[in-house]
Amino acid sequence: MTIAYGEPSTGLDSAATRRAVRAERATVNRWRRLVRARLDLLVASYAPPEAIGELTWDVLPAHADVPVVEELRTAVCRDPAEDRVGAMHRLRELDRRLATYAARLDTAEEKTTERLVMRLVLDELERSAEEG
Image 1: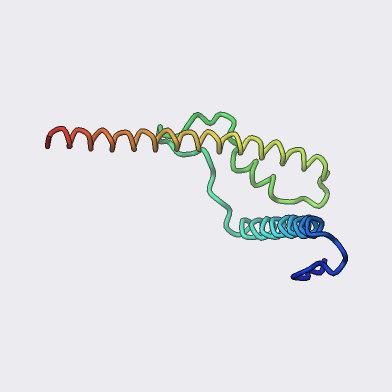
Image 2: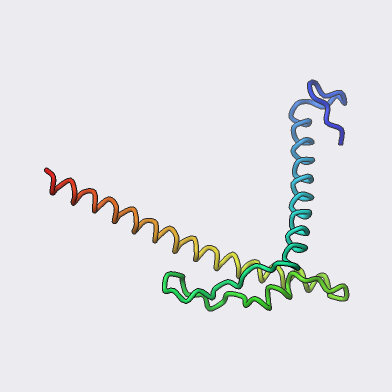
């Protein structure tokens, strides 16, 4: 797609031009995500990320369905003989499980932040009451 600034030279109205540009931008965004994903996979082949769900502190939510590191590594290492449709199904399920775990982590972080803020507010109120 050739991007011409100013008035559309093809006779398209502004709305049609905008739709065309947005469609092209969406395609570019998708390609960028794919390129970044491929780059992430290449980097991970040399320096894999740490395992998840292994912290022993009692601050994380229960994580019974968190994928183990070998399951994650297998999912991101492509086997040329692999059934691509089956792989897509497995990756979508793995992503769903990761998203569920991430949502639980977000909730835990929000609750922890809320408790921290409330503690700071209460401390400030106590300090003000002692001074006044």
